[in-house]
Image (cartoon, rainbow, N blue to C red; front, side, top):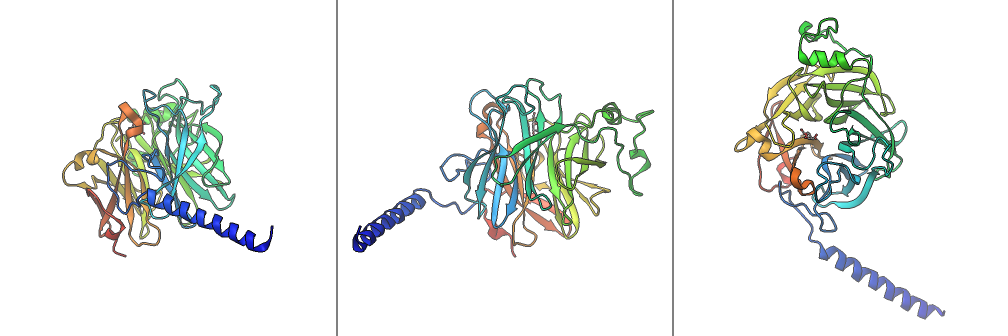
Length: 375
Ligand code: GAL
């Protein structure tokens, strides 16, 4: 081909690509606001399918991981796996596909039809791997297994490889600090309460692990926080340096009070946790805690939500608190509004957290944008 013809053809194809790109970006209006509780279309115009999710920020991009639900009567069973989306602005999300697939082998821990909830992904600097933890219930066993599951990947969007699932910290007693009250120490020779009894019952095989989150501290230590003891008590447990196991060091938080859906964050050296009560898919009042040390004491502060429907978290249940990159004191409370009869239609309630000194407050907004965060 002669040079003029080549340049002409090259120009033609570049023009075509430019036109297609333009058409592509104009066919989908860019979203500029959060509208809690409304359908939230992804880049393909499909309602985001990432329930009970969490978000990892890496190199200028946010990655949202959550439970992929399907339409119809599968209810809460995991028929597909964990879905991943990416975004640079938090309003517009690109479908990155399934990060962790359930297995077609019915003998596999994460067999298709199991219950796989609340996936959270963190990055491990030592191994350079992305580590995903989730709550796992084995196929056909209802909510009896109460296990923690872990999978890893070299690439943030996956595919993640399932490693193992188990009940954490078998044979390990809680870690006590000088501030742990005497009446919070377990005595398995004579358990003082129902929840202590569950703890002692599960001591040999490991503690139950249901609703959960993972939190990475500034020093790189990671913690798995999970509802344990038949959901009566929350455990906060240290993960191994590669984040794929438990070290055996853990504390029990708000013993006997049934906290679920934990979400942790840190501001000005203070640790915060928001959680819910325990009423299944039905919403209840949120609760928040704070602590000066990750090992406690964790102080209970009641409901952070204010105004109408604050007693039911505006119809939602916490799943994650997202620090907005590059903004000071900017944290987004993320909750799920479950629709158990048609799980795929579940909605997302994202609301800004307001600080009053070191106290927090959450208020309902029909729509809002990141401009609410001042700096
Ligand atoms: C909720 C929990 C969800 C799911 C549900 C099942 O309390 O937060 O993740 O486990 O119960 O009923």
